[in-house]
Image 1: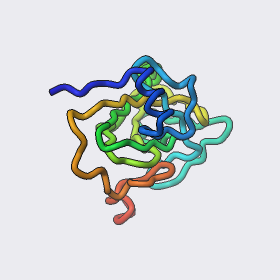
Image 2: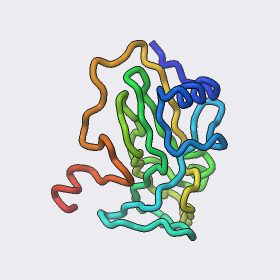
Image 3: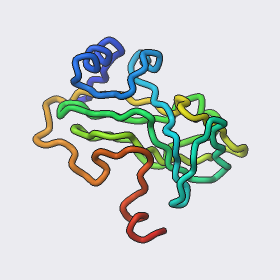
Image 4: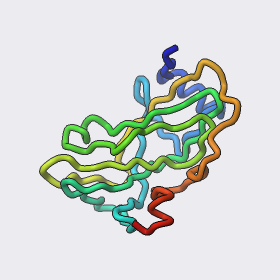
Length: 167
């Protein structure tokens, strides 16, 4: 069975009713079948924090960086989500490293590892819309929601392996 993607009207209605949490919520970020996510004020590269200043940050070619959404997202037990890099940035060479899946019951900001596969540095500004999230109904609610180590995250979070080993 295929997932049913929420359209703009359904997303607005569910956010207004408190069934899906997106904070802060910006009406201008609502797309026909997704919501654009803004860039948090910090990023992580090689385990080091980088401040995303008012002038932004540059992602050098062939470098991996962890970006985080400005928005704190809360999903109910009958919704999952997928995160994508906005196509305008993908056309410059910015691609996600791995899958951007958000489990039912997740609460927190969203960390997305990205790599610049282009030949030139890519500039991102603080709060810039860098990713988009698509919400999908499940055919029924899950028996229990996400309870993993990233629950309640605020800002970019490295992997557990990186935190433990220091690599």
